Length: 421
Image 1 (cartoon, helix red, strand yellow):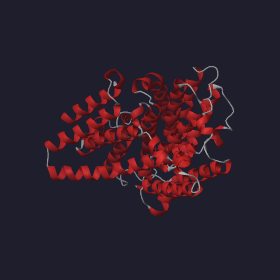
Image 2 (cartoon, one colour):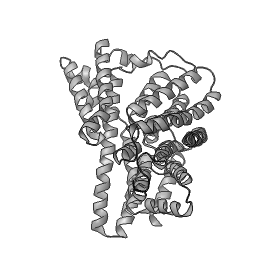
Image 3 (tube, helix red, strand yellow):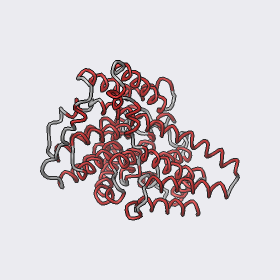
Image 4 (tube, helix red, strand yellow):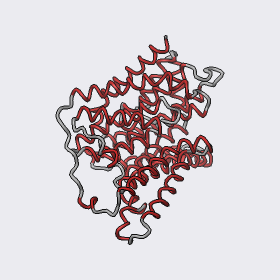
């Protein structure tokens, strides 16, 4: 009960960040430490200490992945690499740009993963949109599209990767059954937002300081190709080596780091400082990484204490209907991370109970992935965009939660309808 109370207090502090005047990263860190402190004081120090070390092993992988991906994106951005993409997006219509952003995020998330895709897409949005309100609106669309794009690919989301590695789903089956529901879950929010958008966006004015950076068109293309290539190679590296994704992203960062050092080796330190990894690290939003750490620490305490598993068992006993349970897990993933929820479901049901590619596993992949879009802290993509664009919890609830919920329900109905055929 104390853990639940501490988590609730911290959650409210994050929600009312601006009213309290306390940065959400500070609230998240305090919540994470408080939850583990309360947990270890009430139990066996050695067992809980070992659990914390195990949790930090998983969390560090996520944090290093986030840091590496953000640094790669910053390096590409510093070299104006994204200009090669944004220059081809000519439309300034708010509605048309919304469709372009959503489609790019949807496809990119399936090829990379929803976290990396959201980071890349927000960098593109910043190049295409000037006004903060518009940036936040497109940021919300990026979250919805990235989470939906991740559910129909075995490498698009952490939860689908978990189910894929665990033998619960196969690649061809998940694409066949979840592509259409995922598209529906994006189409509904995009239609909702598009009907409320009018006029044109204002493009950012050219930054003179960027124009005089010592980069040539060849250097920009080279950094974009290498940077994009190493991001695309991450899932391939994982498949070939079975090492966790953060190892692939660190390999990619090392490669791009080496390439940029060789490109600019003849330039003086002052001219190349903004184009180096050191310069990129200074621009990486460390607050969002610390916020991510605090949130995942708090959720890890709830998971280690068995509260999430108990919740899953309670739903199994009281609800009974598998489809309702799965949709409830999806709604729960809007509040807590979908990874421990899916892990709990994997622990509850064996492959003997639900074999590979069973309806339950496929529906779980959809619900856990898209349900995280209902609230901004419900997914890694949401937390990344929240940190990068300073989107508040309350703003997202007012503008995006309802359309995201409607998209989630519409996609679920689409899946259930297809499953009956």
